[in-house]
Image (tube, rainbow, N blue to C red; front, side, top):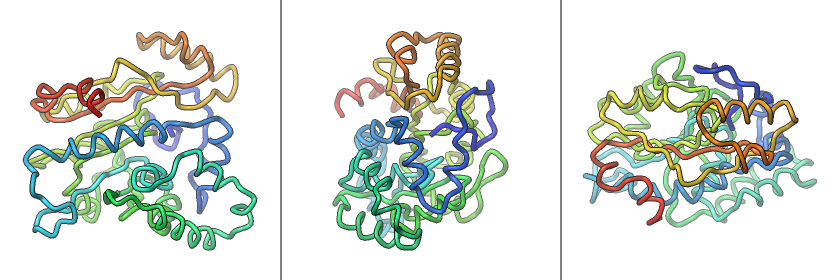
Length: 300
């Protein structure tokens, strides 16, 4: 969710702040607040990320084992601004976002302590684990959210670090050596290339970066920063993805004006009451030429 958890690097936003829901010890407040607004980005991303993952691992890595037992680094997904591991829950388990809203806002969940909820979650997700599940590493500045994602078994590893302020620690750098796909479903507006460059530099096969970006902002500061590394960013111009409903008329007016200022058309999207995101995919230029984004999405 794109909120003011990170220092904004571009035009200041006028979005409603949801900072407090990321500092809780478990995701019940997250699902309660965002469910009331119909937040849907992880739902849209679930299918896209699952279709991109094997494609991101194809060039030059055939034969490499996903678990790293062949001597190479373990193939992983890195979810930036992962909060409580929601993308990992959807990517690796037979669950829907709607089912998670029902689970975490239920009277039964409300009666549990955080420790009891974690115990229940471990069993819940273990029973629904997909056979093609992939290791997911989480990165977020919220220590409580990272701790929950790891304790519930959603994140294989988690790191509460802000790469806008400094380089990744040694453990994070080691853990991401085999990352094939970096995912972002919220927070892109508050990031710059500073977060991504140290995770991509020096990699013989840099991972792809798939980000759902609010149309109220620009992804240019990130894409331009990665272009110097020989990486090309493509934007899916064929469709947009509803993010959530506006909290009030002021937020809608801001969004309509910001989208228009960015050169996009808010009619039928922001004018109809919801923020919308667009998918951006960054990868080596040669791969983008060989199989453009619209081809990947069509085939997927």
